[in-house]
Image: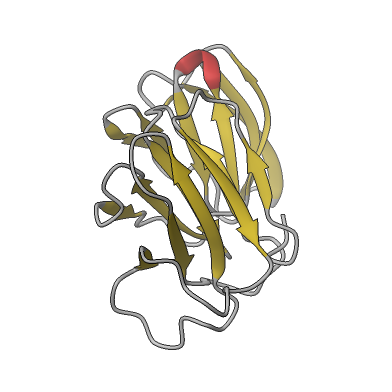
Length: 188
């Protein structure tokens, strides 16, 4: 998904509404949060999201752009915890508590190339070049071991099993993989 065309995925139940704005408003709302807090040149390509939580006042989330690469994930996803919103901006991912927007997690996996909802497993999956991170109602659940030398492709999510492909440097070919979504471990 390109940084020029962010997506919205509302697979999980959520206690908020969100709108991706084409640019920062000329007049800022009373509540404006910048993610991460200390960043230079936030204006360049930042994802601007107007968030309207059910329980609190609306706020503008300005999410710093990671990479201008069209392969990097950009958009908004509902999270397993209905109070959280996941915002991705050029592969940088921010998990924001919409009831207290000053509380957020800046995902360590960078860049995130894809975000996938595994609804049956109650997980939001973040796919990087080599690994996958799973996020549940209580935060990060696991990070897989190295799945690929360069490029993980998720081909299917069936209940608690993720199937995909990863490129192996030693064999110079794509190899199939299957992960148990309960643990993030390879399945035999």
